[in-house]
Length: 75
Image (cartoon, helix red, strand yellow):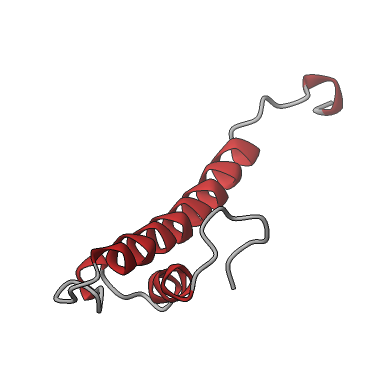
């Protein structure tokens, strides 16, 4: 489920977000052949926001591991 407060709250956006979470490729966009190009972009934005959420999690993990050690407590 997409995080609350996202700018694009459409069915296509949520479908794109869920597609990324399910491991589908960006090219799996079901609206690529559709006449309504707007739906394609909402889907892409949802997919990209889901990827950004993943990258934020990875960055937080790396930063938590890379913090300086408190040398006062090492004795």
